[in-house]
Image (tube, helix red, strand yellow):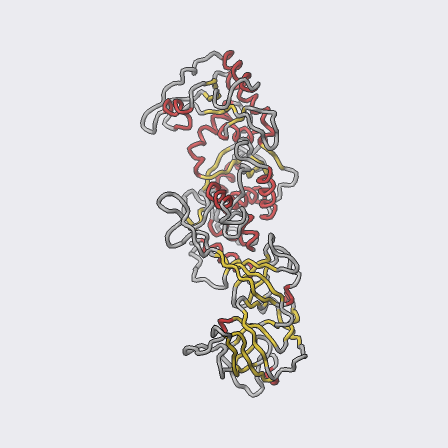
Length: 557
């Protein structure tokens, strides 16, 4: 890069550059703080890669922190799935793994400090009445009747809350800020509530828990986070974030910066909806390949590199917008096309018998794994008298410009020979079940010495040596034409989101293929070995993406 060439910097980088130049921080310190109440999805990938990437870019630190302050919905299962997803994406937190619940004692002490400063008070207002007192966007709120309790009384009641003397919801601790603030988040928000629940990390030690808006800035401050990067819905919460770190007098308070979320068209990301799909058995778990959780994308066959490419293409901005799912498909095609072997697989088989080929003979053809990347080497594929081809590659009465197999026509069997269709056999229902051909021994390798040309080339597998497999073809789980949601708020499900093909055959080279290993099936698309259901003697492949799309990458100018 030329020294005077302009470097494009997103607005977050510009803020960090300014903070470093002005001495507001010396080491950039970021974090990714998921709540362990479900699996992460593609939108979280943007935040993970952004926070980790900034730490790497500036030679700083990156924390992995679980924001586990709400035991109502949190489970250890989600903690483990999130850790696995983030490691898979390549964000390495090293020994910097933290839990918000590790700071519960410090958060309690912080609440006590606010009470002592006259900045927090205990309230017994019922939730419904508290909402009424809060006011509206156009009308200020009313003071809580307990707002002027003495510091001593508030300290006593808060201590009793901690000791378990009150029922869930009976008392709360509120910050004392401004009930007339134009920002409703600043109208004496609740910062602690009573909840007699078992916590996945601390067990039964606590029966009071901090609210997210109070806990999060404290967590950031304790860990020395310099830039707390979050999505736009927290922009209105920033004044409260700043109030908390200011009133608690942290020496080097973190700075909150908001960016636009990553929205994909026609996908389901809401945890409530996914939970319902799982519970009703419509999908087989949070990692069902029709979903866009990170675990689901991994199981379907997406790669960390493809997701990084996707996030980079989407960019970082302050404006919410939606991205076409086809862009994500573009990224996985671009990532896999030079990395994966191109093998032959027959998804809807019909038998072909080459009548003039020696019955007991087996030939092996050496073929290049990827014509665009010779470094992937070669493999041997067996050729025998009986083969399988895809049913769509044969027609009894073809239309014009159909160049594949039909009676009297000669085609090329990929990598092998010219064959000519001589006859076929039907079953009692009139379905073609077997095709008989003859081959030209002189056309070995797919070229004829006399120079004659054939227009059709079809793929095949040896009936004797091919391995049987199940293949799963996926479409969007919701109807793309009608939209994600019905008028009543329910999901508009696509009844054809999953097609299972049980009677498929793949090259013997795929025997022993391992979970997550992927291949290009010639003329079919990219496929991945299913990590949950595939085994050595019962291969299952998920279609990642078809080979081609009409999608055009938008201009990045």
